[in-house]
Image 1 (cartoon, rainbow, N blue to C red):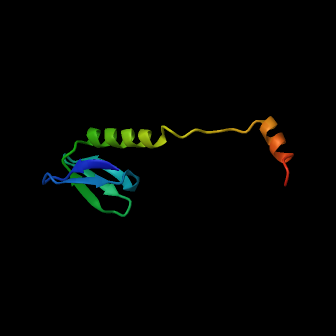
Image 2: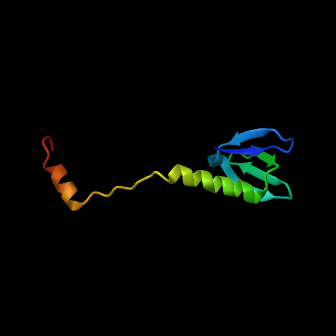
Image 3: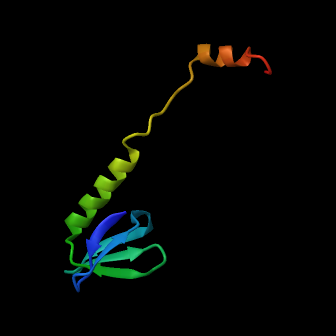
Amino acid sequence: MIALQRLNGASFVLNVDLIETLEATPDTVITLINGKKIIVRNGLEDVVRKVVKYKQLCNQSITVLQRTDEDKASTATEPGE
C-alpha cells in the first residue's frame, strides 16, 4: 500500500497490486486492473519510486531454503515415514 494525493489534495492509500499502468499525460494517471482510472498529484517517478520501495519492503525478509541431499535422507528415515 502506498500513500498518494488526489488532484484536490485529499490523501488516500492505494493497493499497488491493483495497478495495471501508469501514465504522465501531463497529470499522472493510474489505471487499475479493473479499468478504473485515478488521477493523482504525485509525479510519475514518485509513484514508481513508492511502488518499488513498497515491493522491496514486502520481499526483504523472504528467505529461500533449499534442502540438501543429507536433509532429504534424514527426513525419509524419521519415524512415520
